[in-house]
Image (tube, rainbow, N blue to C red; front, side, top):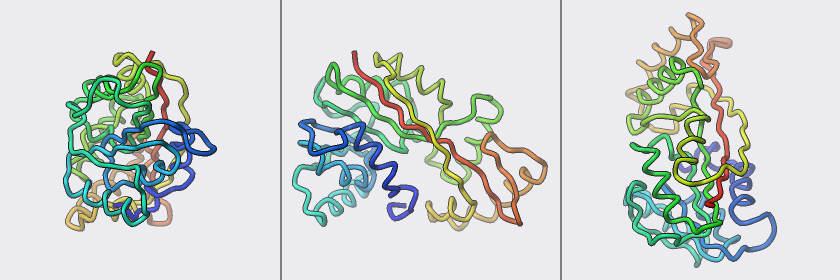
Length: 241
């Protein structure tokens, strides 16, 4: 997973950096990366901020993150185990809170956003990056079902309006949102999770859907015998008022 090109895209990492730390020099900010995984975002932001903390509930991911930052000689990063619904930090402990490609794994997104808002200082920023589901409920349900069949740790991708509503209910105001399209192919999408036993059955299901003209809200289609579709991620910046 950590070596997949989609998670190491410099354009996206730089967008996160610019939103969190500014585009030039090092900012005097303490950043929290929630559900930091193998530390890709932490390592990218560390040279541009005063201090950065990575938090994840999976010890193996924290070990990978520590190894990544140690290999790069990063001294201003440290890592703490914790769950997003009960973050182990004081109120208003961070200037910036970041979470990338994680919201769709949260069991209770509103509770997660309340916790992330709690640990963000007044005037500070919350930055999320995740794929949005369709605003059409049936398409969103089918899309999420396919994602769960691929990766059982997937809970639910939110639509853009659901995401913004959960952020607002946590006491934050949307400041900016930038969306783009990731063009995906079935084989590349499956390779990221290393689950060969799921490839055959899921390919049968998705091929049948595409053949029947069911796009699942992601433009699912067959092109020259290849399954293709599109994800619609967005980077959302919110301010704690």
